[in-house]
Image (cartoon, rainbow, N blue to C red; front, side, top):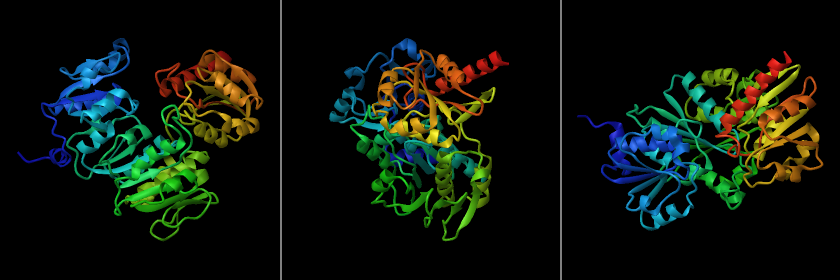
Length: 466
């Protein structure tokens, strides 16, 4: 039988796990994908998760027969004699069971690293504090319009490991990567790596913004002079982190002309890749709007163009791509008040960008589970743009303390109450914006559920006011 590219990739990267013990830590989407793939490869697979079994009924039901499951914590016995440990993005690498396993000689990697070793092809990777999902999806759209085989995956929803089949060698993976995933890579190398921006986030997990930023910069660590690094040159952290790039620098900028990259000039996006000055699109013609989305569009265009995508495909996608759910998504209007779902806005940088993109007074719904960043950087925009701040969730007391005196602040027990409170204070032409600045896990399973609850409440409000 002819050797497949998939088999060759396993041989090249040492992924022969047949009859060996492998432990998957975390039973979310990526954990299920990794467990099933390794089981298919002949490994003895164990899955461990801190949640109780009744909370994991659905993912456990998706596991192949024969995979052993531990719930309610990580026991030392589960990690004993493990040849390989694959860690899901939500699990810190610093937890004691993983540290002890490493000391015993276990090989510990992220799920995205496993997927990379099993998926032959070319890679475009995207990271940053904000805009990752939109930029990743937009790159994928550009490539598809150019007729390329492209799979959008990673932190955006589909685990890379779930795609580990016998793909043709010309397949391209456009991977959204979080700092958590990047902590656990070893060989992962992207032919094009994109760093969008850095602002405080996940400081409940990192010692400070510098440690968080260094995790993001790992996206470039395996690149060579044959590769490309798309970097936002308006962002100070991005500039500091990329002083010693081995890859070819592809700058983007909203505020100045750059050579060999993509920039905004007046109301146009322009590419100087290849030495010319090719106009891509006028900003008002773009399918996604807002300052943050111009930055995302610059990065996506730069990545696609250096990857070899034609100008026509890039222009077409910029005009027609409409964005993703839960990211500045318009979900309805009631008596002239417009409702915007930005449930994906889980850090203060995202809230700032969302507020800056709206051109009318805003009634902001925020709160959830704090990430330890503090909320003082929002004060100026609160005073300038927010007429009412409605707070929900565990972080409400901390947010109120940090933002007291900036605008009217109200509390709500539920998201539905918050929507109705904000609407009652809004006038025609104004916005009610859900941009929480926090994680969702105190009240919801994830940000998607939170966004759906917001949209459902708006629909009920429309029916009430009809």
